Length: 88
Image (cartoon, rainbow, N blue to C red; front, side, top):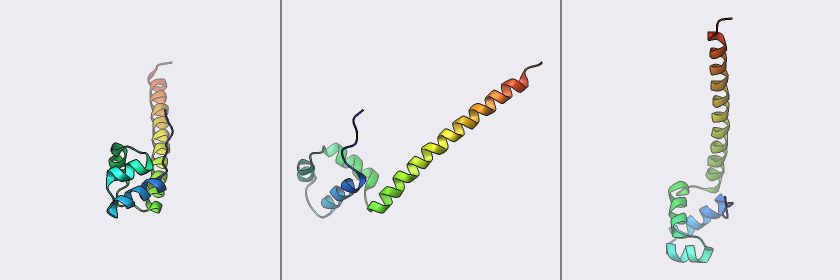
């Protein structure tokens, strides 16, 4: 899988350029990105500041960790129920 070319700070700067009145096609041509990427970024980062984007990334990372913890606990519970249900 390809790595990310643009960081959140760069993406927000691109979106702010568009808000200032520049055409989306010109911005995409200037920064060598597709319009589809631009609009996907706009739906995710539109109206955000850099600090908010960093916080969003931190929350997403924390959410992934919590999902892993829940998955591990669910597996442990199923294993214990299976062992407990057997007759020795």
